[in-house]
Length: 537
Picture 1 (cartoon, helix red, strand yellow):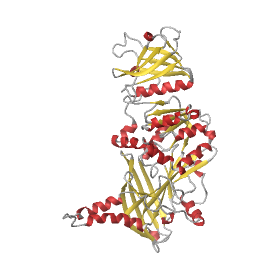
Picture 2 (cartoon, one colour):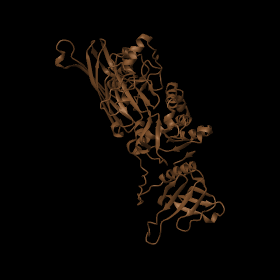
Picture 3 (cartoon, one colour):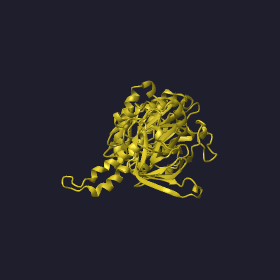
Picture 4 (tube, helix red, strand yellow):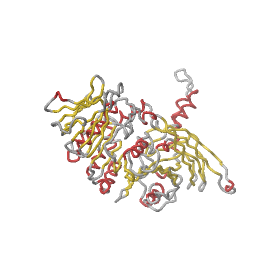
């Protein structure tokens, strides 16, 4: 069932409840009642109409009303006294008896969604205050970016693109089904549910109930898909709204989501995932995925470098229909190098073993994702020109039965995320065994992405190198929001088996060494054969 949130989308909504009784009059109950959410002269109301007597309707203005759950089948709705004259008017309330627990949950969800459309003030009820209509999401994301974002994910063709990424979808399915014990009989919240496919997976695994929260128009399609699978859909409620704003009738035992963007953090949905954890997850509840890792290594790719640099040659023309374009050549050159390159590349282009930055979704704070600072330190395995930093990510589903990784590593089966490379306008030269140091500083912005500040330096090498010193430095500023999708180029091909096992163990299946002792058991579930360095939030 879908619970709509917007006034412009829903004019009224009806529920059938078993009975109601006036708290202040008697303990007698009415016959079966229709509870209707609607707008009357622009005011959101909840009206109870007994089927046997339409003149006995009971009205509540949502602005001044609160709903409390007394039991799985019984709730109380209370309306405050009038603000105009509290001394001469009184609060009133009714007891609502539902026919089953499912109807109770749906009613509570609808009540919160309808109420959230009204600009409300904090009330004096002892068990909490009403959320304001302005959410944290709106505070940090510009409206134009959010509109484009939700429009994009509200289209079926983009959902199909993600669903047809069989590495992605198959890994999620396996992670859920191999860990049925984590889902069976549990309450699940699907954060950013999209088409609802992960909610259906959770229901297949035996979830008692799944709340599929989706803010885009895709919520309507998710409802259709779920309704078309009634044996599973009866345990799934679609809630249209942002996780920063919606209210749920109960806490979740487990969160499931696909919040990863390019370089793991693009689109800033990880922050919403963490907010959902803080709002909805029971203490020590599970999160699928559980941790994410950004992997980084310097690379050498002369062909890519020349491809980008040559784009600016257009602006060298001094007689373009009588116009000298040269004044813009330098700006254009820097502009092309400000675009991260998204493609699939051969892992043999890497010139040093990768290091990784770990984000533990179960403990990271939302604010820690506003700015991410990663020190870089590598030792070159070859003598070459280093053209920049290659990046990819993986996530862990830390199930009670099976721990499964989803990776976007070079040389592994390609996903719709591909990999990402930050290309420097000025390459640096290194020799075998030479140390490469630097920093990747990622600063979030309101367009739901990050500005990347990359610096790489070649340290002194050979006799006297122990005294330190930098021989050459190169830096660049890139916008993760505006990548160069180089997907028409030849894609990566797998290494021969003997090379693949050695190379990919260094970059993909590395062993996590937690920076602190707490949680170290979680951080040591992957293969043993690596000396990669980690920096954890």
